[in-house]
Image (cartoon, rainbow, N blue to C red):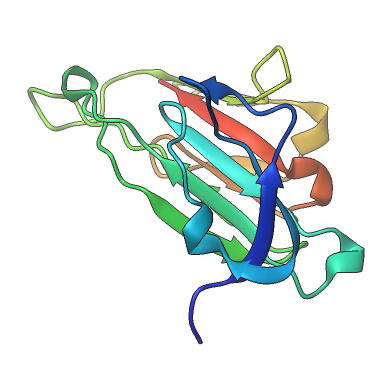
Length: 162
């Protein structure tokens, strides 16, 4: 079947990395997406959602995690594809550097351009979820974010902080 295909352009609201834009948006079905991969900011995930009128286009969650040995974070670029209305998991792995066990922690997920976290989970307390994600966002495994019923409004950059 091959990799998903699409034409990408720079997003005007994307974060800059040493002059390299990290934001991408699907425009049409023309160029292999694999040619458009660029460095992402630490623990960042790019979620691109096809609008209903672009029914043939993919919903793509692209993420890269930066190595930070002291925090147990590993670099694991990954590509997840779904269509609008389906679910995606934005991975964020945390392992204690000494014991290998997950430490007690607060998990926060941010969407670039939104000043407050869209999802916060601490211990056994119920998570705080932004109203735009209520009933659709949940913790997956230890720190990953599961988004149900993805919409075009979900498109953007996501960052995990643990």
